[in-house]
Image (cartoon, rainbow, N blue to C red; front, side, top):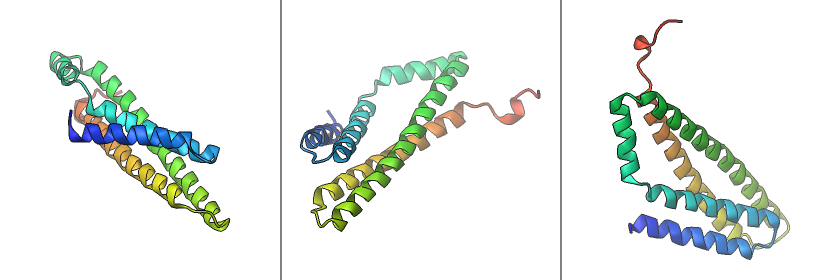
Length: 147
């Protein structure tokens, strides 16, 4: 198991455990969102190289259209995760501001914000990688028939 995989698993478990002890529903939701982000990172780290090879083989065989559709679905999902992440980050910043305003400790809320920001960076990088794969699968415009 890679060091990254071990780190992501540990953070996934920590975020899930913190959700159980959250003092508000918003904090619980934010911890669960962070846990889900790390679960996705674990899944990505565990991706099967054989499946990746099959996709490459399908492209070489001429099944690029089907592969392109799959990658487009992956791109839609990655873009959705980026958009959702922005909302979670905004909400967490509001929670921190409310906690400060009411004189409460913000340490845990700020730690969660840091986790959300790290997850967001990872989602944005994933989105960029999927976009690049989709761009590589799209035939050049000059080869597309004129409609």
